[in-house]
Image 1 (cartoon, rainbow, N blue to C red):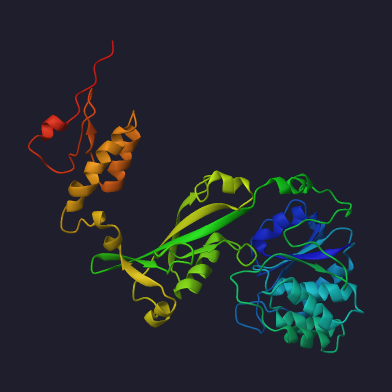
Image 2 (image 1 turned 90 degrees about the vertical axis):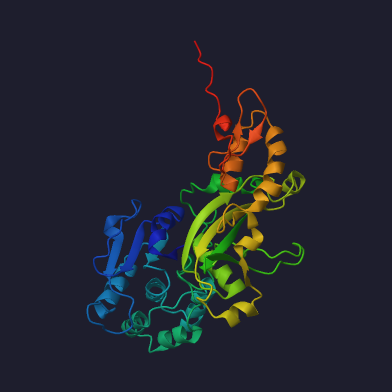
Length: 407
């Protein structure tokens, strides 16, 4: 059962291996440098140098009859014993148009409107290049039917990039999902089959993306919060969303989409800070054993300006800027050492540190969390703890004695 795999440039190696493809069509700008996957036969790799434009522009190569003619001839030479990979830069415009032309070349009796609808069903993001479609319509003698059919399905949904999908040459033929390999009985080597057979043993996994969005105004840092979700308690939280691999290729693209939907804020600079995936961190072990999804949490830091976006749109979402020092008052060193460190926090840290022996890791954690620098010294041979983060008359006595010399 032959079919076409449509994908982005960065997916060609994975697509070729996953679907056991041996032939490929590349629609990229002239002199675009990329590596042909080793499983693709060099003699059956068609490279078409053209830009994704609908009309001639200086310095760019518009799709032309020579490109479509080469595509039609290549399609006629495809033996259809293995899937064909067709790709462009993003998998949204040139490659879907080339797939439609290939399908009509090999199965000319099919209805153009049905073909266009199958394309749209396979991917909500594609917008086939209109110039390629117009030239293909003329060279295949479709009498404008292909042009009208592609126009009828309209522009695809906005996306940074397309999703890989499989497209049947003939109507009514079943094809695998874009991220799955050929179905059983395809007759091709399936290196992924062992993993697929064990998939039911792997617990469900959910990837959560959190954003700490920070702005600084008049020496005061602020953090953007969103209203608590029902069932999560009354406190505000950080913008959060699950990773959606169907709509987004990367964690960052998914995070940006979640933040925009929750806060109406278009993020600028974003940097991934941490990833937590420990078992039991988000649920107890009984919940983990009963099949509940295991959550992997990925945190991001985003820097912006509090006045960078429309405040009315942000307010309408329920999001708001909170004073960082209102939430973390012990971090406010603008007027010197925060009084609550000595009044409330450090006295409680001493018994906490002494609960565990040896306690070097807890002392180090306290230093890092509360900017104690070289403070919190454990006196050798005692369990006393003191802070030397500020000057005191007994500072020399607070220095640890050298360890005894070992002979």
